[in-house]
Every structure is written in C-alpha cells, then in structure tokens.
Image 1 (cartoon, helix red, strand yellow):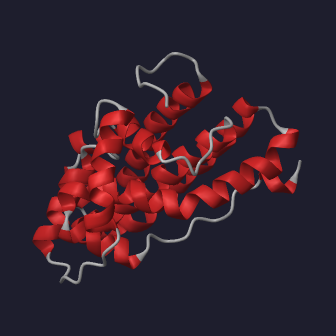
Image 2 (cartoon, one colour; image 1 turned 90 degrees about the horizontal axis):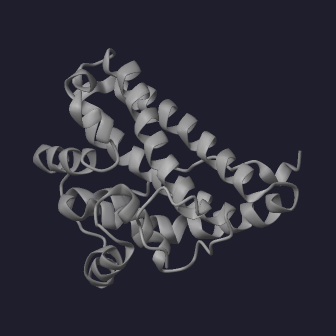
Length: 222
C-alpha cells in the first residue's frame, strides 16, 4: 500500500479557537468550520494527491471515514473519563474530528478542500443550515467579526455549558438523547466513546453520499 494513503495524526484544537467558542457558543459550529478550512485544507489536498494514484475515490473516502470514526471513539474514551468536568472539551474535540473527516472525504472525491464552499457544506451536513448557500452567507458575516479575533475571556462554567448544549445539537445527535450517562466520571468514558463513534458514522455516511454523488442527500452541491 502506498504510504501516502496514511492519514497523519490529528493535532489538538487550537486554544484561540476554544476561547472563541466559549465566548460565542451560539456560533461555535461556524467557528469550527472556518478554523477547519484553514487547518485541514492543505493536509487533505496533499493526502488525496499522494494516495489517489493507488486508490479509487470511493475506497479512499471510506478510508478517511473509518480513520475518523476510530479517532472519535478514542477521543470520547479519553475525555469521557472526566464526566461533566470534561463534557465541553469532549464535544468540541468531537466537532474538530468530524470537521477534518468531511474535508478529507471531500478531497478524496476530487473536491478542492480549499474552496470556500467546503466549510459551508460541513455546516449543512451537520444540519446547522438547510443548504450550503445559507451557511456560506452566515460564514461571510462571521469571518471578519469573530474568527479573525482572539477573544480574551475567562472560561466560565456557564460558557462551557452553553457550548456543550449547542454542539450536542449538531456533532453529537445520538449523544443528545442519552446525555446523562456521559456526565458520570469514569462511567461516561465508554458511553462517550460509543456515542461519539455513532455520531461520526452518521455524519460520515452523509458526507460519503454527498461527495460521492449517490443522491442520498438533498444538499445542493456547489
């Protein structure tokens, strides 16, 4: 197998992004999408270019899918140990993993990960907006005002709770219906791992259908 097909390890969410999300939990998905486009476009393009010669688009995209489902389970197991104390970090890290997955799946299918519609499509696949076009309009407003500025604020518990609730609606849909178990220290770890993996699978399947052109999603392509 071509060594270029291996996906590099995922780095942690940048601290400035975390602070922006705590300060603006209602715009957390948009902030992740913008940051992900800056961080993951180059690696996704490079990976698809190096690995694509030996893999069909579909098999390459499924490789990215499986890799990130595994990462989301491992992340849930690690951060789920803290229960309520690490719940905000858990769900934010899950969003970071899922965002990278979508960029890699898009690149595997030949879509330019640098295109400004990629973060908009991520938001639509999450269900934050009905269409990528609506998401792009919102991102155009977020970019100058929030994403380019480091917000200096204390990481208060109220901000973390708001962030958790907001992100669970989109990146952790399965977890949102059985949230209580995740809040219990130690016990929350295996529950979080399973739920995170399930949520990432759901998103990954939508992304595979969308970029693979199977017609299984109603999102408009751009």
